[in-house]
Amino acid sequence: MQTTQISTEYLMTYQVLLDAPAAIDDSLLVINVKPTDGWAKGPKISGTFQAPGADWLRVMPSGALRLDVRALLKTDDGALIYMTYNGIIQHSPESAERMSQGELLTARDIPYFVTAPTFQTSSPTYAWLNSVQAVSKMVEIKLGDGGYVRYDTFIVR
Image (cartoon, rainbow, N blue to C red; front, side, top):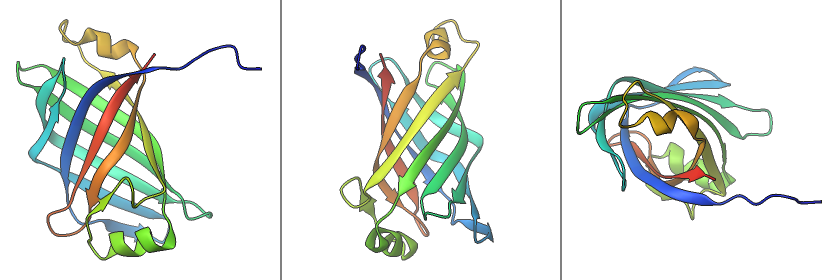
């Protein structure tokens, strides 16, 4: 029997540029996050992504992808925020094919693409991030030339 409720509060939208995926084998892809032009904007946070950062994507036997991502955000006022998240991508055969061809896909194109970011910082201004769990939903993704991913991110309350 349900006894609690979950609500969310908008935290930010962010976008990072992606290198082409490097296939380690049939079960693992590594995608470097380019530090140039990656950004985050929200009511309480604004900044740019810095090196290092990367996505490790494991292909599960079901075909779902499990994300393991690490990124470094530098806020406009100079604070460093380490962001890490896991997540799940569940493609349809059509969305997987379109993504492998370098097409731009949106949240409407991929059946399930959700992540769970956490944050770490020593900045007093952003210390509240150390104590929250967030969830993100993919907005757009493109792999290959000009690749990027954009997310909307929410604090879970």
